[in-house]
Image (cartoon, rainbow, N blue to C red):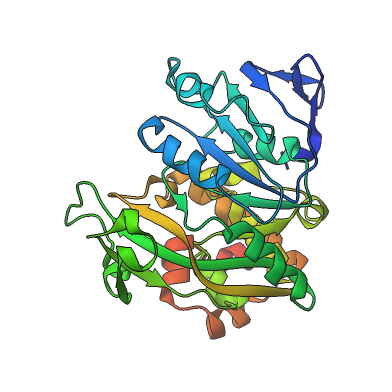
Length: 318
């Protein structure tokens, strides 16, 4: 499995994995120790990137570093937008030459982290509040056998939504006025999904933990990092593996603005991605001794339909 554990980066900015060089446009790394690392993988969303970056750099109450890795965006827009933040003492940026579908870029950001905690942030989303990350850290540390923490998701429907874009799950959520979480969202109707400690069976069907999330880097290393074969769904393996190791800490704070602007390409199943997800799940079932009968008893039709799992996938393990 390819992950950040195999990376090596020299002081001159030469990045390799298992001796094979990975082409970079540039890398500017700060090595100041931090309490947590917010990581952003960016690709062609420079129109929203500034808001995401500013929301991360505004964090107080702890030393929070920000690591932004561009995933092969053509041109120099990424460098232009991030130039204004380059002198920040806790700001690291890098740009890959080639697009990796958010896998190499995320793993590189984790590799560059100078802290014990990883907090992912999408380039078109925002952290709400200036103490959100420090609050996550406090709640995690107060948990018993904690392996992961997550806040509420605040959904913001924007852009051109068509009937084909299945966002009915969002519109069924309770709503609040934007001014209730931040004055800059005044006039907008926002949707809130409260976080909770989802079961393994629920997480198998879908990664419900959209929110501001905190992963201990030591535990990410213990499970082998993010599985790049899963493409943009590479957090899926981490969520499931961690769920088998301890407890999730739900932090019921409206700290993560999740922008919904049409079809979510990160969850669309291509034949290649479906094959990769199926292969990962078969390995996961075998490792944790999960049987076909258990899945039938606990997982709804959504799991079988979305993940494409069939009886023949169990021939080698039942």
